[in-house]
Image (tube, rainbow, N blue to C red; front, side, top):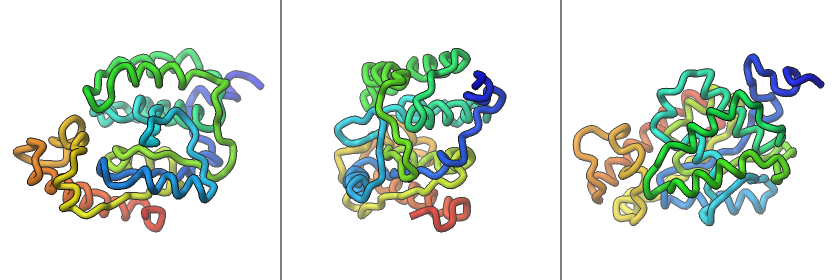
Length: 223
């Protein structure tokens, strides 16, 4: 098999058999880890490099950054291919995609995603001997995915998305305000974004409204 046949270098299209992952997200502290554990026990595979909270660190490396929304369509397609290949096929990474990996690892995400964690994920994603998932039932958990559902749906057209919703008052007083503080506060809210209970509740409302809007895109594949 030639390199172009193995990698589809002109387009980096995600194979149809890999286009239906189960993705779990929500505001940090909502209970996404519990949902992931339940699904694992039901036979869905969650491969890849994960932290203690079962967040997929390969996804964090490639996608959990503000600049992802500024990337050209073709660059996002290649990032999705890199991620799905790491999760499913473990083919060697083509040389032309190495700069995308290095660029992703160069972004400092602050205390919520330390550079040492990103550098470790950068090393492990290139390990073709790491375990992968070849079965049909697979997915990943990363709370921040709820912000980028439309972006992911463009490249994973059969994706099923589980949005974990916890009581807004619980979330207003949660110690975990990383999304509001470090990533998406000024994207989701207007005006003051100081991480306090009032703004945490505002963020919860904005996130819920946003995911409700995504139902028009995903239909019954949004849970």
